[in-house]
Length: 171
Picture 1 (tube, rainbow, N blue to C red):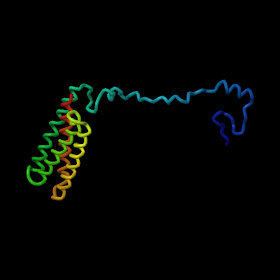
Picture 2 (picture 1 turned 180 degrees about the vertical axis):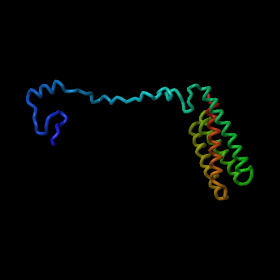
Picture 3 (picture 1 turned 45 degrees about the vertical axis):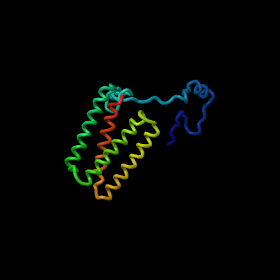
Picture 4 (picture 1 turned 30 degrees about the horizontal axis):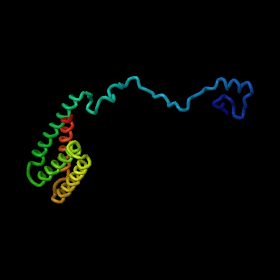
């Protein structure tokens, strides 16, 4: 069965002059440059994720500083608890984990605050150099049979602690 085309004619059928003139007056004109209109859902709350809010859900700088201070304190206590309960404050694992944690905290300081106290290029260079030293310490810890997860986890906790504390204390 032959179905009509989009314009309503059968394949091979031509318009007469009357149909063509009527077709030209009924033609729909569209702007080619106009983008399509977005479709919005009625039940979505667009104000929840406004451009003024941040990842912690508040646009108030004091509330953000309080939340970052809480995160810094909690991660510092988690680091101490990790040293006490998992690593037990002794052995090579403790020394390497403390070294990695210290290097990560100093690296974070150079990266986040060093540019305000010294040349930004020099601060970023020192941050990169200390990050390299951290990798070397992790590699040395591997050669002395220290579990890599202990060093990396303590470094991550130190990074979260120092970055949260520096962000909370920034102006």
